[in-house]
Length: 161
Length: 303
Image (cartoon, rainbow over all chains, first blue to last red; front, side, top):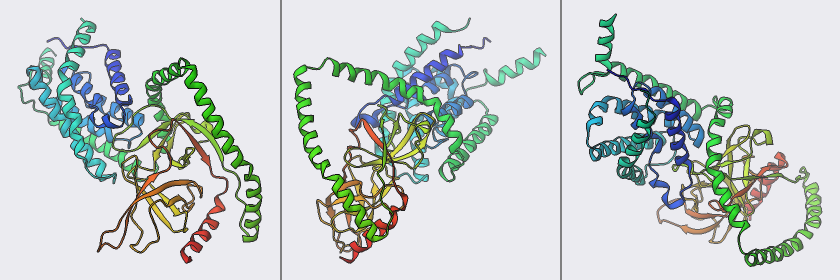
């Protein structure tokens, strides 16, 4: 049983890339179409390297995201920890899904996440639910195969042997 | 020893498709509780402010990283833009400057008059507001709220709650600061409210954000209130946060539902909330000015 280890800097770098994509300005009309980049990167690493990336990393990444985007401290942390937990449970099945089926699962996890996020947001008294939250998971559905392939190629190149 | 290792691996890696994860659920509960505790602490008290001020620095390089190429692109565009376009713009600005200058020339006389009147009212003189130009970082933050990141922070004297304006009116207020940057909430955020007065009558009310960048709403005016389309709203200075007199918006629509006790008045913000690249951080000159604003407000009601 070989336990796969990946260089921590590679994992860190993919997260930095996700943070960067998260704050890149898209313009008023596209703002709801931005996929949850940090969530997607987290899902990928939770599937591929669960010994290195789990709920702890999710919590820290979420806090960093909260501090970067100025949201309530803990809001993204909660969202990412829940994602990490769900992926952790279904990881062994998700790994062997064909790519399109995996994309569906990812979209479902991200939609669930948006619902929780919106609910927390409403509890904090920040307005009501907006149906436009469904766009981001839909976009994630279509770009997941590409994200997965790109990350997989990069990962295999830098894997410890 | 070997036996133990095998058992451990069986649990973590080779478990059947339904991995038994009692400990996973426990850890989820712990992390979730920690996150909720943080949110509550951040939302209710201001317990986290000091820690956040330092920690929020971790995000700043990323905001800068995104902002930089966009800024560089704009700079290049300006550098290589047509000479003709630039000189045309220059002429236009000069024309505007001339007009503004002519208006400004009357200001000392008006200020002197204002001071005399204030002395008559026995209120303290209104000192000039100190301002500092800050740049908006060209980044998107949370789509759920209307926030912007500024490139000035604690070392420039920025403080939470500080009013932010642009050339046309109030933009919002600083929410929290780091040593070198600040996050500001726009007046259009659904969580934001500005105390305003109708400039024509002095009628005071509150302008709430709606979550739409080009809309504010007044919800507290009774059906008989004297407000018409085109009325200018200015900050009333009540609450002591926004200096009185700064424009906030203009009434563009009044919806009176028969049977409802209150009007729904739609207001277009004066400030270019989604277009300004540079904003002014304002240090209000005199906090005691509130008293006068209140007096003015009352006289407005009597009219």
